[in-house]
Amino acid sequence: MQWKDAHINIIDTPGHVDFTIEVERALRVLDGGVLVLCGVSGVQSQSLTVDRQMKRYNVPRVAFINKLDRQGCNPWSVIKQLRDQLKLNAAAVQIPMGLENEHEGVIDLIHRRAISFLGEKGELLEETDQIPPHLVEQMEQKRLELIEKVADADDEIAELFLMEETPTPEQLEEAIRRQTIACDFVPVFMGSAFKNKGVQPLLDGVLSYLPEPVEKKNFALDRTKDEAPVEVSGLDSDSLLALAFKLEETPFGQLTYMRIYQGMLKKGNQITNVNDGKKIKLSRIVRMHSNDMEEITEAGSGEVVAMFGVDCKSMDTFSDGSMDLAMSSMFVPEPVMSLAVKPATLKMQNNFAKAIKKFTKEDPTLRVRVDEETKETILSGMGELHLEVYIERMKREYEVEVVSGKPNVNYKETVNRKMDFEWVHKKQTGGSGQYAKVAGYLEPMSADDMKELGQVTEFVNDCVGTNIPPEYYISCQKGMNDAMNEGALVGCEVEGVRVVLKDGASHAVDSSDMAFRICMANAIRDTIKRASPSVLEPVMTVEVEVPADFQGTVVAGINRRMGMIQNSDMNEDGSGIRITAEVPLANMFGYSTELRSQTQGKGEFTMEYLKHIAVPKNKQEELMKAYKIEREAKQAA
Image 1: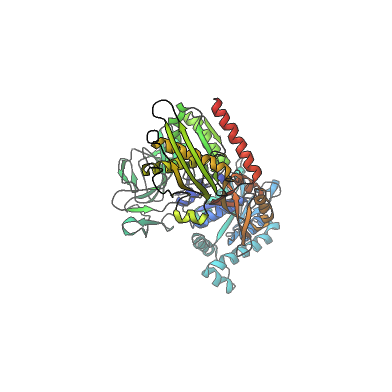
Image 2: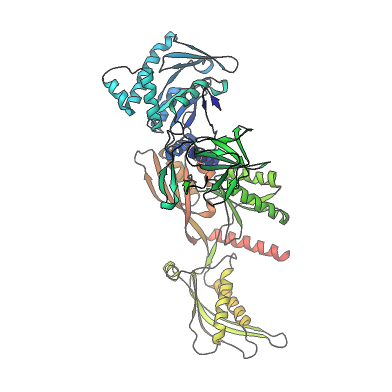
């Protein structure tokens, strides 16, 4: 947008935690931010997340306390929360003229002037040096507080403050600008955006206190010198360096949003994708005004523009081909929720694959993998709403009906005691038949044995003599592997079993590779049933970070999910706690939603695979019953 003699690129970001990547990508490419806070609710859970993201990218910010026309608003409480919860050196540069229904405007503390907003939408400004008498004392008190807070960060104002001199408005504005750009101070503006009150002074504040593109230090990575950081000049006259930070599908093709860090983008010029070396001719450049597109022929350093006809991934760097510099990518959080997905019919398979490819290209937090054990397609994202949106988009944009559900848990089976086996496989069908006999034992393996071997099962040949001809030993091993692939209890892979072949017998005519393979497989399957078998389930190491106030609720929630608390550490200032627990994966589905509701959205968790352990007896019986029903249904079909 154009404001006074400046061009401001504004990117609005969603507030829902599931779409946190949109905030990440915006903060990665912008030079400054406006942290919008509710005058009633103050610092909310998502404010904490956005604050962490702003600090990650060293983004200077101003704060805007909104909704001062609502009942129960208290801007001074919000500023206190900014200082206490976000640990920001924040102070008001305005005070409100009336609150709730009486909110008329604001008083500028720096220039000591009252600003009223008239007209139906607050578009008419009336400025006056006549301050309402009942607000003069509060204005002077808050102005002194502003000077004190700026003095804490700025040496020039601190010197004047110690000498008991009052800084001029110009000195105060310059100091606020210096310290805001250095991320050491946050000026706080106030108003009601719905009624357009306080918006114009906020835009003035953006021009006054947030950096121009050349003032914000940005670094590229030199790929020829082991990715050594190189400061970007931000000048139009230098070689082009731009970052594609967002992709969007439109009726006209892929729309690529790009931030230019230095140089110029010109229509008709060729640019090079640094990541894959592809050259692209710029056929169309547009400047976005919400949904409207303004065709432009060129754009300079610091601008955010969009382009058609550019095939790339999110976070690809573009240059004019003269340098091998790449811009650093953004932080991509790990997904917290997964769904098993598949197209409703085979006809939709192609479109399903196209949609998945397109969505994962434009959104780095959306991950897709095929589970090696269950062969399911697993879609992972930042939460239920996030995944629901993409499933709905598949239906709307690609006409793919998706069947989604809880991912299958990768159960395993094992044995708990040693058991001998002796098995004869005999089949006569006229002509050459099938004959094989095997004898030996199987026994459980310890975790150390499996780690040392680097495999979860072992075949040991202890045969002496030629009762089993040597060429059939490999067939016996293949038969063991067949039995291990599908266990007898719930049809899952068997692990932690050592099979020792001791003896056997063969027939000169009827014995064959297939006969010994079938014989060994049947022998193992039968013996596993008698060797005190059990079902194993995956257990995850779960790390939960929450404010200390919610510790009791979160621990109770983990206990309900059959988790074992291993450790809990308080952070340095005592405001947060990290809980480490071991929880069965089958009990973790839906935990992200539960944690958010327990902690007002302030809790976060990560989990990774730890080990497999035996399931409780009652759960094993449930799994066996479900497997039996499923197998009978398949046989009936």
